[in-house]
Amino acid sequence: VRFWGERVVVRYRNSQGTMAEDGSLEEIRKKRLQEMQQSQSQQKQQEMQQQRDYVLMQLLQPDAKARLARIALVKPEKARMVEDIILQAARSGALREKVDEHYLKGLLEKVADQEEKTTVVIKRRTFFDDEDDEDFSDL
Image 1: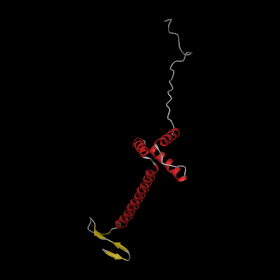
Image 2: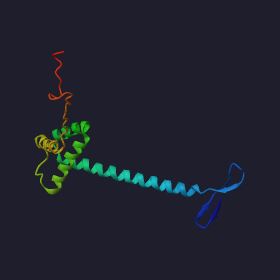
Image 3: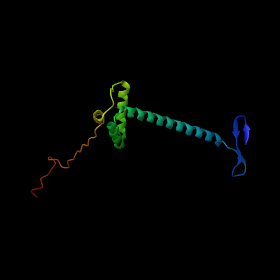
Image 4: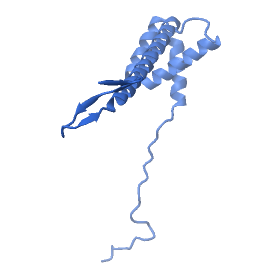
């Protein structure tokens, strides 16, 4: 190992028995930095989720919390939409009291109306039209 200024050069013998410099040290540093950044990003997301959950706990009555938790098990995206509506209402000052189950049902109906309803239309093909039918009865 030799030090050249601030750069560390690692020398080793490769499979042919010759000396070679290890440039992977920089790659290791870059990889380590990327892992640290990902870890910090995940940590921030967890903190934001914890803050969100705490605020929701303050805004919801126990029966509404339980209903929203059950909905989140089945349809997490729908529960997330309802949570967003509640948080937005709280930020704007539209909520005067804690959200009860009746108010939550109303929000769920709003979200259900907003969601696109999928409809299936079955079109049956007619293989023989009346005009094209030949009369085979006199055969």
